[in-house]
Image 1 (cartoon, rainbow, N blue to C red):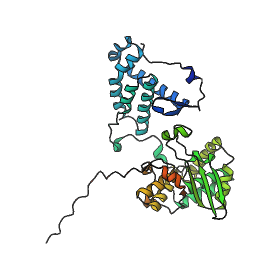
Image 2: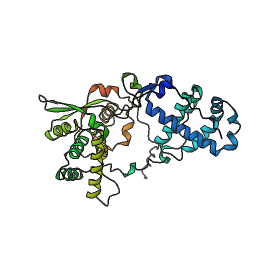
Image 3: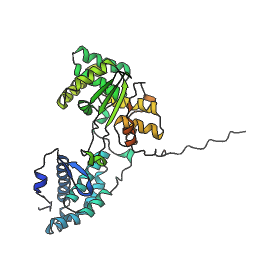
Length: 347
């Protein structure tokens, strides 16, 4: 059955490199590779709807492709709402984004706006959790950190030991480490890491509004081991990172075979979130400083990283003022409960 899926063959798009940034409607930017992935995901979703509802879409298939997609919109919206109970928040948003991009690709801009306006009907606490993410250890005691560092050094694995130390000191995303450049200030006895933020949907100055990762300079007191670790990783790349992560994961599994939660490099980012919350507090400015160090564009993203009362008293880096100023301050939401009034003392 012809499902009416539109397959454009735009030469200007197809001849682009996967890493080339392309512009779509409303001046949003994304890599061509990401754009193609969105189109493929939305086509799979639409084809599944057509196969599941043959009796409902059969009348549409005699129409032109664009008219077919317009007619399909109510059913597509219904299926998207059903999918919300079967997907995590991130996976559902990605699907909605894919369909939005697909309709814009087909030049159905009004319909794409309607898709973008659809809200997830499932309460946040009832949504599915991403698979595998709960396996991460989210609070690493100092003794465990020292133990895994010792394990890697005894094995002669200075690359893994180095990246563990970098992530423990700065709380950066592991994927950001190979792209860090650094400077040593001998006058102030400090070392500054210049971190290029990951999780960006576009590159370059004109894509700043679409970026989720924040570029920042993080400064801590000078330590020779940290200096050596940064120097080692300044010469390594993505493949070295993947191999080091695998060795670290195996080491954690061997050191603590009975644990359900596994040590990984990302565990150290949760630790740093706790340390930052303990140090900076919950004021608007304090939360902005925490967000800047973590590489977040808003103050809300830090809610998933640690708790002040879980702090291990680790080093708290200072972010450059420019990065702190880029952070959008979003007020904390009121708690979903109201404290019960205290009972009057009985006389």
